[in-house]
Length: 293
Image (tube, rainbow, N blue to C red):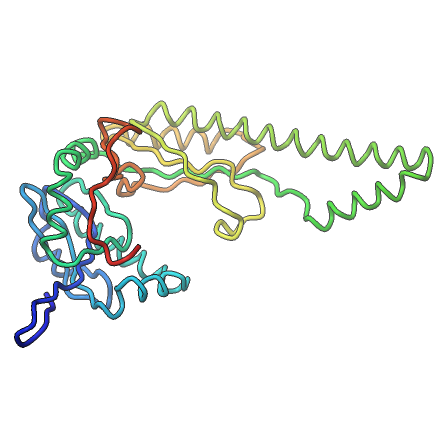
């Protein structure tokens, strides 16, 4: 823990927190794990019957101004995200964990421990819920990409130009309208198939949550992403869930393309600022002294 020298008051260092667990990871495994490259070794902060996996990090790189600047740079953002995931994985070595949001920072161990003890009851319930369960991610894309904007604009301009050409113009407008109906019909069929995939997979999951579909820039595909769903699956039902995925992949679904991955630590179902027993009316997260906004 960093502090001032001389007669001045001690200044608490900045602590980056990764995850909460009630089953402390193996000491050797924790020592071997890497968090942020700029920080010290991963360690535990005890908070009653719970443990917080943390890392001491330098204020020059992790105070509010510096961190905001770094997270606005794609390369630094990716490095921070990977470091955070490594810390969460280290915490999950022996049992369920509640991953904290990336760059959860406190000024000193007492502040970090107080944030956990203030929410201990909700965290205990959440750890019970996540025991022996993992997350699976399924993304459903349309099989075909929509026409390029330039091509669509050209078709509309041609339709407008042909509108004054009598029967030929009317025929052209009719073809443009038919193409538009075909595109809408293809989109509707793709959505229906995507919803059918989701309905089938939910039969084998404890819970499911929909995330916002990712943009083409993130997916690398021109075809739009229709569904981005996370499923919480009992370890005992993993074979049934993966079997359903295999059947879906083997079935002919010409309107969509399906990507699945897992098992993952259940980030999507580990919101420590939501009481798992109370749903949307749960109280807000406890105040914590964060370095970032």
